[in-house]
Length: 293
Image (cartoon, rainbow, N blue to C red; front, side, top):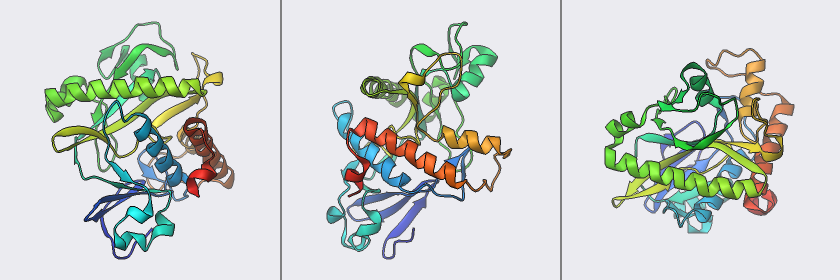
C-alpha cells in the first residue's frame, strides 16, 4: 500500500507506520508472516480484523492501563491522510507517539509453542521452573510472564526476567510484568466466557510523558494463540483461530522457514480469513461487516 503525501517511517512485517503532525498512522496491511517471513499471499481483510480487535481490547482494558489510541475515524486524521480515507478505513489507528520499551511482554497460561519445546528439555519456560508432570496444551498452575527480545529483523528470542531487567531496567520490567499478567487475566476471563481460550499473548508497551502505556496491537490472532474452548484437550495440540493454522500448513509443504515463503493455496487463504473473522465476532460480540462498514 502506497500513500502519497504521507511520510512512511517504518514498514514492519504487517504494519506500515506514517508520521503526521497529529501522531503516528498505524496501518495494518493484509500481509501475513510466519516464522518471521512475510508470505507472498495476503489474507483479505486481515488488517481490518487486527485493527478492529485491538480497538475492542484497548477499550475493554482501559481501566487496567492507558493505551496510545487516538482515533480510527479517517475524519479525525490529518488532511493528507483523509485523501486516502477509503484505503485506511477499518485498518488504521491514529496513535500517540511513544518511546517503545525494547522487550516483548508475553503472558502464558498454557503450555504450548516454544514454551512446550523448552519444557520438554528442562521443565522450565524462560527459566521459570514448572511442575514435572505437565503435558502439551496443559493449563499452567498460574499464568507466567515470559519476556523476549524485540527484533526488527529475524527472530525474537525468549529471555529470562533477569535479562529483561538488564535491557529495560528493574523498575520498568517489574511494572511490565504486573501489567502483562493483569491484562492477560482480565482478557482470558472474558474470552473464556465466549468460548475462546487465550493460551498465550504478546503485549508491547511504550512510555508517553513518563507513563507506561499499551501500544501496537492487543490480543489479536497475530499476537495470541486463540483456542476453541470446546476443543481443548490436554496432551495434544489444539486447533486455533490464529495463524498457527498457516504455520502448520507451511510445515506440511516441507518449507524450511527460509525466505521466500510459499504461496498459500486458495483454500488456506479462505480458511485463514474465516478463522480471523470468527475470532473477531466471538470476542467483539458484533458482526465483522459492521466494523468494516
